[in-house]
Image 1 (cartoon, rainbow, N blue to C red):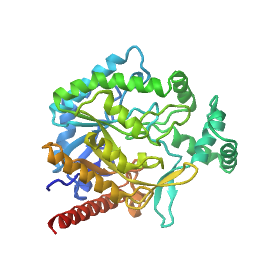
Image 2 (cartoon, rainbow, N blue to C red):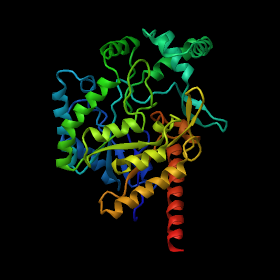
Image 3 (cartoon, rainbow, N blue to C red):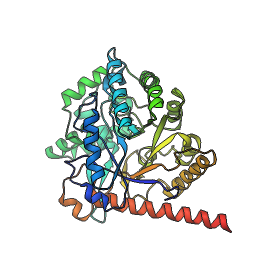
Image 4 (cartoon, one colour):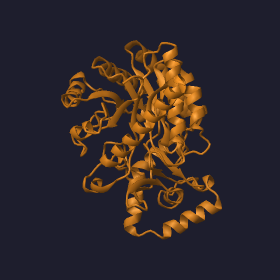
Length: 401
């Protein structure tokens, strides 16, 4: 296998419509999963972890990365009782390490995870993609959520477009938009009500970027020393989309933020998940520059593409065709691997998974989590695998001339 990426596939557990046997047939060797049934903040026991690992290993695969050990909201808000939740977090990653799972992806997005406005955006070929439509988000914020101060965040033109969009929706479409935006964590069917979400907004009323970053630093100064002792690599996932939404701050949006994260507690255990789709949604993010600057801290790869639009909207594109130059991204990651090899690092091979995927053909017949169709991700994995191989062989030819 040499220095190839570790090819992985996300699996949401025994209730996932995409089975481990199906994943095994993709050629992936590793599973990315989590114990989604355990509430955020509760310790994952060794017994539960071993039970999940056995399911994976019995099919001939390996549990390589945890995505995610979710961070309790009290930690993000910096509340008095956060140390209890942090202690639980440390115990969970210690139990994972005991069971041989030592890469942990997490995010620090307040309340909501990744946010889209349409989970069934039809493409010209009949496939379905995830979409973030800026006027829809603004319409929800201004006229459904009725958030105090929302009008200050948008221009007159943006508000007019949002109102026009809102007026075009049926009652059913309005309900679908609300449920899509207020969806809970991946791997769950949880949807916040407007009332529940407004309570969270009130709790975050006095927490801006500065405060949220301070709370992230506090979390890392507690977690990373313990992660070092047990050999766990923590890798923060960028915010998705990479800008504030619905009055909530976001603090992992660009190179400056990623640099801040790794400098909050410099350590081989403190790193990032390079998500090309999340970061790629912001046209100001130069992914090649990001890899060159913080490449040594990249512990996990989410490879997907987006088609950006001028108003901040985007939809998820084919893995190799979109606003992100995937060729240059993979080339630069390979260059980072060469740097690691030159200094004798053991973690040359980086776990990668094809992130999200279009709904294609028989994918429409099974109920998968949004973004996690089977054929769509299989197509993405095949394309990324081929691109990686082509780049590596080209570099070998250049070297041998």
